[in-house]
Length: 278
Image (cartoon, rainbow, N blue to C red; front, side, top):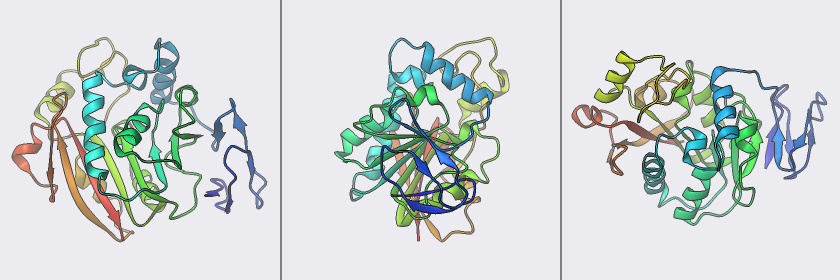
């Protein structure tokens, strides 16, 4: 694996589980808490603080400690990703927004995939919960990944872009670290969902309430559709392999080669967009 300095962009081989110093600008990347590679100067944000707090205040590592409303919803997302990857060969894998690592643990179990599995998250508190037998945790900003170009056979990000207002830097960055002929998979809350539109209309900021589809004080979310993702990666050669429309909390999804399925997508809470880098 090659790391890329996210200050000067110099890249060099990286020995796992060790500190790393950029040979060009001498920036030091420390290895803290016995397992987390620190690769960025992390700024504070409402979203980061929220994820830090739920990781610290949840009694045990669970779906709740990464913000899922229910185990059924998380299971539905994991099952959909597993179906999307079932025919892919084993290779280097990156989970962007890995949280406490449960998603990667369960997904790797379903796919029977082995290491190397890397995980990036901006919340140190979440990464402290990661099982390093399954995932190698890196504390970094997803918009400035500390990996060289074309490093991963499979890059995925589940329910992350809905927390980011401007994804114009994020999407190209995810594709940058994906190998040629590798897959990039991104899921998010569906902007066309009738239920989501209603929730956002009635309660856009969610400061005081807690109910099934939202948590109290949850940071602002940004609803998206697959075309919002595709529009950000025109500088790369790629093909849209298809879109999974996910009908959570029902453990059910449908797959479409096109991103345009007007009737179905109105009832889908989430979508999973599958992109192949050419």
